[in-house]
Length: 143
Image 1: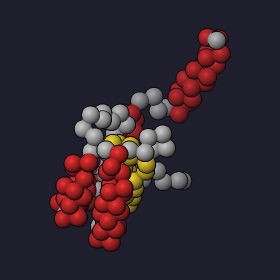
Image 2: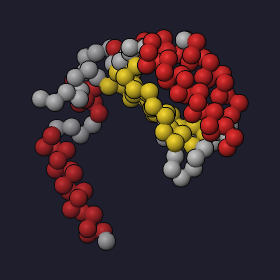
Image 3: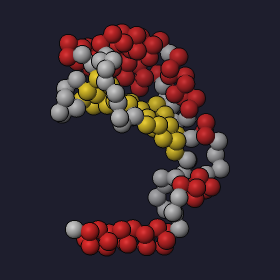
């Protein structure tokens, strides 16, 4: 079994050497933008009590309608329900800048959604897939 792992590992090493991207430092050196000017991509996992599933969806949809209508800095605002556990949800958000997200967190529809769903969350749930990415402008452009 070990001999079969040598070829993919060797190929990956050669690819890294040829592309010159052995660390994240290379990518960060290429981006001269201030972090606050970068696109922000977020992913959060939450779990709600079984009786709160329908309400979470309703509250999120109402908040999303306000976000899309009033917040031009929002590039994505989505809710996904787990196939394996109907009480687990993934929320993804993409914002043009950190300032856009900061402003979002101060708006009434956001505060309302957070407040009205606070008591339906399963506080024993430990999310393992939460992250925030800062995307340098131009990093994903196709040449």
